[in-house]
Length: 221
Image (cartoon, rainbow, N blue to C red; front, side):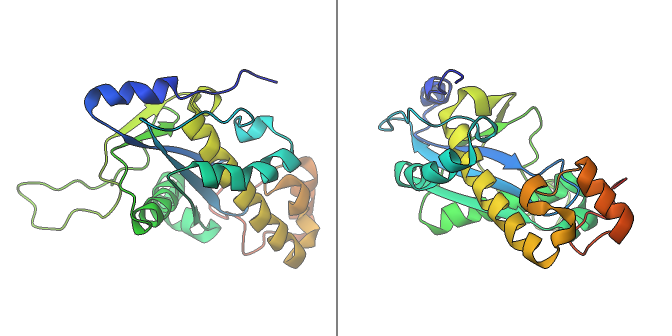
């Protein structure tokens, strides 16, 4: 198994006065069907201890991911998962849908009474912060969304425990949703491929065409 992620990187933010950090990761971005899902795990940089079994969700077996969900939720100061549907992806584009899903998770954390000081986002692009910022020359209200500082880090899910924890929450919840959708649309094999473009999934698309949960604005075949 790969080296366990730590909180070493996250704890650097204590130098700027941060105490509560929200680790964020997404799953489902490259799928052909189903939602895109964003997980958040908030850690206390002064008090949080390590979780030895947590890894990026892609490196864990299904049973291990499912076993770790209650562990991660108990360990986190606050945790949440937000989703954006295939239709919302079609309407907003993938970046807009990621922002929508991420802010749904963000506001769930705020509703739990937790206000993170800083965000650590897996990847190289900040898709979480509001797309539209206020202007001195614009009377329109600012777009609602995460207003904490957002920092990005490529492969944060591999080295940062808060982000790896968030990835497990998002992966397990999205996989469960795809399993439920499979019962209504069994032809596509979503219980196995989770909406990703496997050969069998594409064969089913050629035969049956897209379902209401396919991202029809995408090149599906």
